[in-house]
Length: 245
Image (tube, helix red, strand yellow):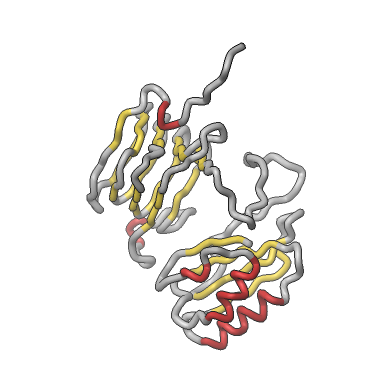
């Protein structure tokens, strides 16, 4: 009888330890077959993974904080955080920093602060814990499945909290609205009422654009927490936020 022991992504042979340190001007390119494992916290300007490059996050006993303006995974690039057979058990935080009006780092599709996966790129994130509002139970690949899909568009709107109500079977946006909770507490109350009136079984996709916390009241936070959100109550000044419940 043989026993199979899965090899965790950060234990695969051929990986080189990567400790770039902290330098907000450092533009990192991982490509041409280079395979590295991040073993400690780091701050860089940006990371681009392409042309056979691979970045793996070490499953460390120490917390790892990775700060960058953006992470772009291009053609034949790979970023791995755990695997289905070896879920990530460590404490990892990826923080995207920079001003929202900094056009120098703007990508034509992904924008300014993003973890973007282009055509032919691979992003694998696997953890042992699942949130109660996460209903995805299998890997989805582009173009597969009989149902339509929902796609986030950068043109959702201006400042505040933008909500789309989505049909979970077809991906159709049933209705949408924007709430400028930076400007007015009335918008926060309107948001709470809007959320309470959404029919059971629909998907709420929410984006915070520019700033939405200034006049966001507890009434709205509690309405979203009631639906299962565990993060919205921590929304801070100029937080960039994408959430579904």
